[in-house]
Image (tube, rainbow, N blue to C red; front, top):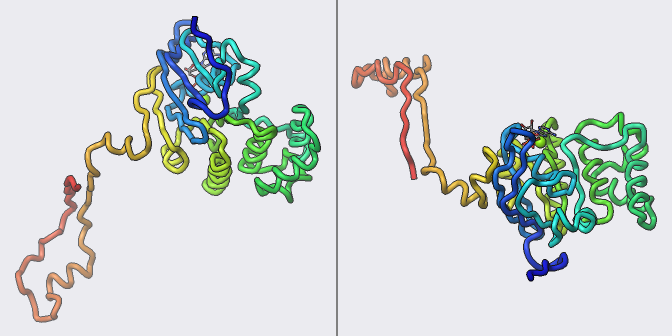
Length: 282
Ligand SMILES: Nc1ncnc2c1ncn2[C@@H]1O[C@H](COP(=O)(O)OP(=O)(O)OP(=O)(O)O)[C@@H](O)[C@H]1O
Ligand SMILES: [Mg+2]
């Protein structure tokens, strides 16, 4: 008999998924998803609306049961060792889960208390500092901008230092500045050794953050690799350039000649209409 190993902080991938399937009635959302996420890395799961990204995250965080396949998080089986998985993870859902009536600081203190940690106030203050929310800490979360709320949400999910964190579309709806702030926070997490699995619809986000990128499409991972590996799947960069309509200056010089000595080659017509040229460059 094969006895599954107990969860281990240092061996094996942080997340291992094999043959995951999930249907909602007739809708076959996951049709055999396989993926591995190395410890301390950032893994981006890309896919269009309805591809099944949130479904994967919900299964990995034990909120939803798969129909088939296996998934291990931090060495624990999501189906048979759900409590151990929950101890190992935090989930920042697609929609911010902060309590708007409480202040930012109160939100953090509440989570620290719920996790039975010592000195919730100090933990809250440390996280407020880390996420540049110290000044806003005493304000009700209802008054926060989308970016501040998202940062608070992520800060809340870090309480207790879980080794694996799931971020479901952490920057959807944020403006570019707020997005960069969240990216910075995520990068710092991974630098500190936390494994991050994030879902996103933004290719740029995956490019900026992820050590590995997987694309979920029609229920399966159709591509999985580093950014460099993914780029190699495409033909060499295609450079497309369009010749612009000549400016008055161009016409002038064509007519009079650059040297002011009159028409040298008589080619006034050169470049006088839009032309699109496509070439493949190495
Ligand atoms: N509880 C449910 N009951 C029925 N269908 C569901 C349920 N949850 C999700 N679905 C369907 O499963 C598919 C995958 O949904 P999921 O939320 O996993 O996609 P997603 O990739 O996270 O999409 P988005 O980018 O919009 O967040 C969708 O077609 C969705 O409508
Ligand atoms: Mg989703």
